[in-house]
Image (cartoon, rainbow, N blue to C red):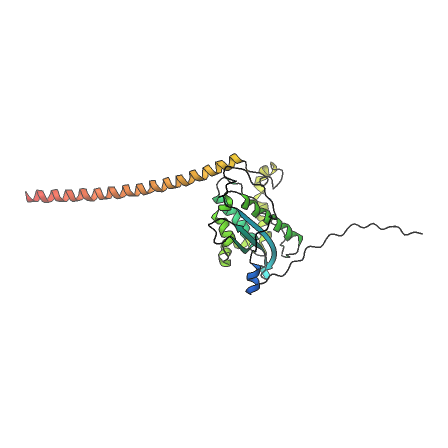
Amino acid sequence: LTPRAMSSSPSPSPPPLVAPVPAHGDDRAAWLTPGPRPSAPSVVVTTPAYDGANDANDCWLHVEVSDPHRVGDGLSKHIEYKISYWTNNASFASESGCVTRRYSDFEWLGRQLSASVDGAIVPLVPSKTLMHMDDPSSRGIEKRRAGLAMFMARIAAHPFMRKSSDVQVFLEDSNKSSWSSRSPWYERGVLSDSVSSVTSWLSTINTSDVSASLSSSMAIDALREKPQHTEVVDYVSTLKMRLEKLVSAASALQKHGKHTVGVYQEFCACLELLAGQEDKAL
């Protein structure tokens, strides 16, 4: 009797090992050194063509998201990511740098860009899961890291969002205490994933007719800006800035008018007083 060949399906490959991250000292400083700019970005994003996009004087920004690692203990434990950047934007303090950011910091950046960059289609931050993920070597964290890398790559490729002061703060501000005040407590820590997932689900209860018209949750993120749209955004931004200056000038003119009226009233009072004194003298 010949033994039958046993067929077996290939076992899934184990998740990648995560190297320990130095907590402080010279090793920490060396780990936060960005090094030379990579020859090619890990995430390639096609930029929309518009007037001035190929201008040699236009600034560029290259951002990499890597090295997820766990920080803290108990209810305060969370995952942070290493953010390295390279740029020729003169408004930055340095041409390259490195910081660590947690998921709620990326959410803050998305909200800020939606409020400050008029008309731009801000990319979506990868959605949270109902269960908290705190294993840096898990596939769930690696999938989230890849989504955050795509989020930053799209921002860096956008001709207006990459020049935003909020992006500069996100990439340069290393003060941890200031970042804790930018996001509410329920968006940070162990409970953040569950709270955000439940909140997101509740927000869709009354908008089922809108969500049904979308083929997927990524439908909006899949949109690409046409050159005409980018030009309109540039025009609207310039028009908004000029209107703000006009409103400021009109407000200053109104204050000047009120001051002038007050001076005339005082002058009339002085004339009346002087006329009364002349009548008494006569």
